[in-house]
Structure formats: structure tokens, C-alpha cells
Image 1 (cartoon, rainbow, N blue to C red):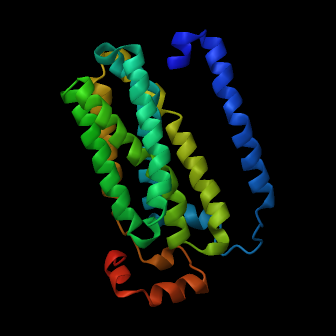
Image 2: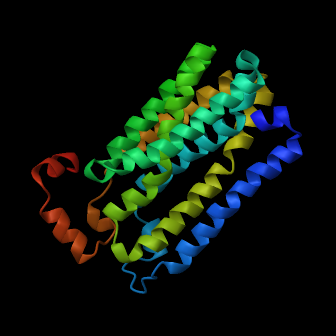
Image 3: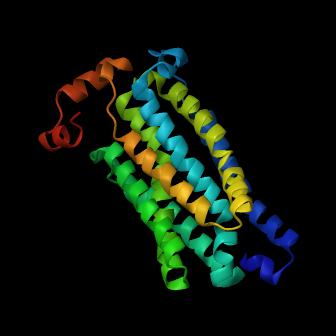
Length: 255
């Protein structure tokens, strides 16, 4: 937003796109160096037929669908009260906090009950959206955008973290890819859903309320512990680790 106000939009877009090339090359290098596990203790059909698996995939699909939809519409939503550069700054805060939270929370997220963390972050996003809708002003929009972004950063990593903890190690790659495909299919509808609601109601009140409702539903689902862990077979190492948790972990991870 800032570059487009100083340069042409096309030039600004070219500059931003050029910054992604080193990151893309690094990601490809890391991916090619990753060792592939041939042993797989779980099939896609078994995962898709497991109620417990859907308590991972379904709520995080809803959560990330809302995230993508809101971020796409964030400038349009905040523009009337903050102007172009103010709305751009709010989006920048959202992105900055998303990147920061992934790093900061990554130091201790493995010590917590990740489902509970996900539910709390979803509740925080609901509060942030409510604040931006109810108290439409820059002093509220900036911190609310930061809170929303903080939750976004952790939410992106939660699918892999929960799968790593609750599912067989050998099936981690398959389950991560399957869950990502489900999430990406769902979140592709986020911007369109919000746009359709915006056009149908001539405002952002209804879209934001729908986003809040979806996140409340996601928080409720992610807290469900449907079925025993054996619904998704675990490898021997995971069974040993779960059979001998530290006392405080037994409390955090108790079903």
C-alpha cells in the first residue's frame, strides 16, 4: 500500500514479488533435502473415516478460511475509517504479528495442549473482529489487527503440530499434505463468501458476524476429543511417550 502510493501499482507489485524469489529458492532447497519416510502406518481412507481426524481438519479449515477471507477484505473494510495508508498499516501489523507469533510461540507450543491453544486463539480473533466492527476507529483497529494477526500466525502451524502429536510419525507427511489440501480447498471460498455477503447486505457487518460465528464453531470443534486415540493408529514411539507423560503434561493433554 505504501509503495503503491509512492510508485505505480505495477512497480510496487514487481518489487514485492521479487522479494519472494529468495524465499522460494530456499524452500525448494529444504524440501529436496527432506528424507522421505516409506513406512506409513495409516492410509488416507483411514484418516478420512476417523472422527478424531476431522476434529483437526474441519475447525482449522474454518479458521483459515476466515483468516484468508478477512485479510483479503481488510483494506476495504477499514478504508472508510482509516484511509488507504491507515488500512495498509493495519494489514502490515496483521502480517508482522503473524510472523512474530510463529517464532515466539514456536519456542513453547509443544509444551501446551495445542487444541486448547487453538480454541483460545480463535476466541481472541472473535474478540478482535467484534472490536473492529463495534468500535470502528483507528485506536481500536490497530491493536485489534495485531491480535488477529498474532492468532493467524499460530493457527497456520497448528495443523502440523496437532498431527505430529496425535498421529503416527510415519504418516506425518501424508496427513499434513491431506490436511493442507482440505484447508486450501476450504479457504479458497473465504474471500468469495465475504464478498458475496458484502454485496448482498451492502456492508461488512454481516460478513464479520459470519466470520465470528465460523470461528466460534471452529473453537468448539477443536476442543472435541471424539473417539479414543486408537481411531488413528499411532506408532510405538508415540505410545511410549504418551504412556509416560510428565505430571504437568498429563494434566494438559488429558482427554
